[in-house]
Length: 346
Ligand code: NAP
Ligand code: ZN
Image (cartoon, rainbow, N blue to C red; front, side, top):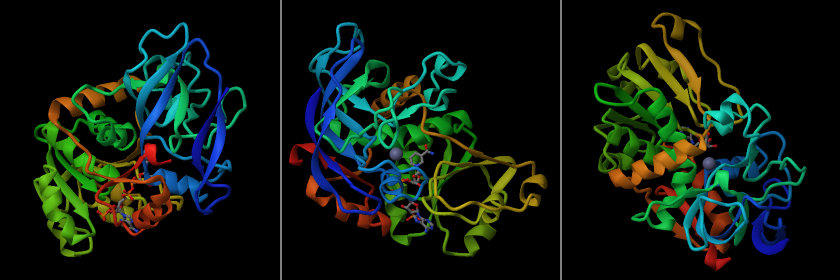
C-alpha cells in the first residue's frame, strides 16, 4: 500500500479538500504512475455534483490522466520505469467476454471498473486522477506518443477518445457532412478529428464568439443554435450529428437537420430524459444512437492519430486550489476549452 495526496469531495456538491488515500500494493501486472496532469471533464462535475445516480463519496474525480511510470510489477511487459503514459475512463474489465475480446472494454459484460466513482472487482472504491499517484493494471494504460506534451495529451484520454470513436464508427470522412453540436471540451477536439478524417465539418453552438476559434480548429462553417434561421438553412443537410452538449437538447429540432439515413449520435450525458417524435425518424429513416468513450486499443490508435495529424486540445492549466472555481466556470461555459490540473501544485 502507498499513501498519496488527492483532491476529494466528501459529499455531492461539497467543495474540494486535500486529503490522503491509500493506493493498492503493486500486483504482478500493475503499473505505478506519478501523475503530472489531470484534465477536468464535464462528467467529473456530473459525478461530483451527484447528477447521475449512485455517487460514491468521498469521491476523487479525474479520468484524463497523464504521468510517468515509477514502478512496474514483475509480469508487466508493455511499460518500463520512466515511460510517459496515460489512463482514461476505466481501470479494469473482465478481459474474457466478447466485448473485452474485441477491445471494447467499456461495454464489458461483467461491467467495466471506472477510474473513479466505481467499485473495483475486489469491492474497494476507485479513486481518480486528481491525485499524485495511481496504480493501474497495464491493460488500461496507454503510451503518450513522443512529440506530445503531457498537459495537452491529458484531455485526449476522455474528450479525445469519446469523439474519435463515434466519428470513426459512423464513417466521418471524405464526402460526409458532419455537424459537431456544442463546442466545449469534447466539441473542440471533435472538430479537429472530423476535419483530419476528411469530413466537411459544421459547428453548431450557442455562443457567437466561438466562430473564429471553430474555424481555426478546422471547421468549414459555424452556425449559432440560438438563431432560428439556422434550422431552416440547414434542414436535411447532415449525415452525422455528434451531440456533445452537457444539457438536454430539443431532439426533434436536430433530427430535422439530418439527411435520409442520417444519424444523431449522443455522447453528451445530461441526467434529464430526452423526448422525440417518432415521425422525426420514420420519415427520413434516421437513427438516434449513443456512444461510450472507446476501447483501449482504439485509445492508443486515437493518440497516435492525434500525434500524426497535429491534433492538440486547447487547455488552461490550473493549480489544485482552483478546481472549485474551474467547475463554476465550466458550468457557465467559460472555458477555452479544457481545464487541466497541474498535479505538482497539489
Ligand atoms: P463542456 O466542456 O462543459 O462542454 C459542453 C458544451 O455544451 C458547452 O461548451 C456548450 O457549448 C454546450 N452547452 C452547455 N450547456 C448547454 C445548454 N444548457 N444548452 C445548450 N448547450 C449547452 O463539457 P464536456 O466535458 O465537453 O462534456 C460534454 C458532455 O459529454 C457532458 O455531459 C459529459 O458528461 C459527456 N461525456 C460523455 C462521454 C461518453 O462517453 N458518452 C464521455 C465524456 C463526456 P456551446 O457554448 O458551444 O453551445
Ligand atoms: Zn470524461
